[in-house]
Length: 450
Image (cartoon, rainbow, N blue to C red):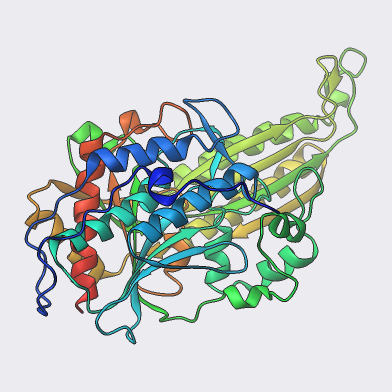
């Protein structure tokens, strides 16, 4: 696919790169002064939001769409302006590297995503990509030079919008053979366009490309760190600057179908019914019960989809469909909840004389724990910068969940307005973003010297 001609990099980015007035003198000491160019960073966030298929203030940027391709080009231009060497893999994960003075050592990586679900906001993921590039600039302006190389990663398709697969790029980096095979053979979008065709139209997946070329070996990076808006209200409500993530809860997704006889809402008397809709409703309540009975506040469950067929007010539902999300930071406890949900589904079907035609676990990813040494580095950086912080759990999916399979992992949260995310009202202040970038930069510097 031919991409539109780009404007000159400096005009296109709107970002002047400020080099340090004090070139590196050969020492490997940590930077003592960190200056974030908050105005330029906010301008970049605003400019990136214009690559959208829906009008402002919403952002819609779907994998391999024209707007996604343009946004990717914008990020690559910024990486180039920051003096990073840029490469892309077969699915469009983008890497920008600042070589350290011992480039043979495994690098320290940071990054996030820029794809956006329909009618969402402009900060989710974006802060972790543009903020990472700015963190590199901050370190360069300070005169710091890393021992280990530092690498910024833009992950392909963290959101599941187009192909129903979340964290597609990072899953592949972590070596998912099952996903690679599915992408090559069976994965299509809502318009029946295959993943391979969509990728090739966007300039990826050349004929000679093998998806296994995307896989990274364990230990490819010495550490991975992701900066992200909290997507929850805690930091703002408590007046804190930084959240240090100790664990990422991983969801399991379940699809359930019941089947009954249906019938006319007036003609079939109550004693003679096998109402599959009520079986679905009873299972939804059972999900809530089993989650609450786990005894942990970290266990959550949601029936996000409940569809009734035929969907008429005067017809007894005959084929309900449910999709259930349950997540926890404790894999064993989450899986016990899943088993109890399954047992309830079987029992409800028997009691109501309907059939349980499907109970399928779509995915069951393990949770991930942040590495203790990275947590300490983040805590030390936050204290040295005189910023308030607290330890937190991430209950949302992030690419860090899968990068933890490649290297030690950590995450930083910054506050966002009322916890809003995945909606146009999503917002983080320039000061909160700058605080996050400073902590990210100092933590990267610490990790690069290990």
